[in-house]
Image (cartoon, rainbow, N blue to C red; front, side, top):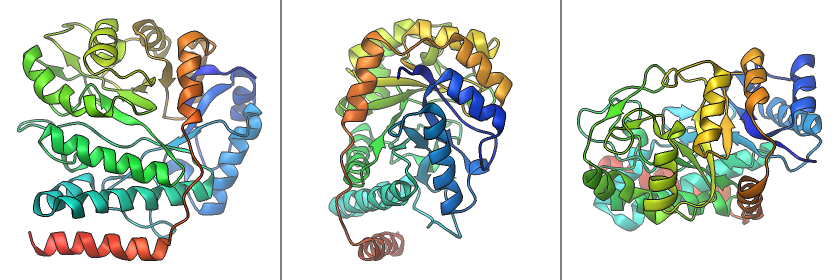
Length: 341
């Protein structure tokens, strides 16, 4: 059965009758979970199954933002706390191999948690490179302030997710590190010169261009497109994301309901699709907004459908590993890094 080019959420711990009917009629490509959707493992697994039954696709992708640190939708008492991305960067500076091993182990353990629930996609890793004076929305989620280091740790995170049978989503392409505002609240404008962006911000994404999926940044790069954020800029998507960076995978927007974007939800959806994003992401579970997205999101077809199929085909069965031993090793590595700080 064909799917529509959007990912949607839900309002609570289980689908309402209206939500179930909406999913059945509109057939979104994927589903995303937030803390409002999470209580305990059995409940989450049931909600995931409800979604797949509603869209009549047992393999439909289910996404979550499970980074560690400040961004964890799954947490105590049922799921462990994982380190923030900056932890791996600090450890990497003291012992490169230890930093990469910790990043890989953390991602593999996260993937195991997700796979238990039927969640198949994690919105991770980040390749954002923060600079002094930037908004704290990225902050310690980033792996460091050097593009090569960030890309190297992001690759280790990717490997851990893949070993755990979960697909990665690279974010926030082509870079959120210079943003001086939180895009949940307003639109950031970056006025850095194009050559500097290419040498620094975009450089962290280029080594990761082979990842199956990426999420855009709601950020204006005035040296390239003075009026539109990357999410709705055909110029940035074509010249930077597909061109300079070389990303050819499935491109999804960041959340269409964020205040960084202008216009109605329907207008934003049209602009995202027209700019060249393959998938529109809507997160807040507001059914009226979900209907607006569905009204403007096309059937997945052509290159977008090909990229979606290629992305999902990259998911491999989880590799068996000793989770208790891996957790103990991760704890030991991060404790050693903290002790040497």
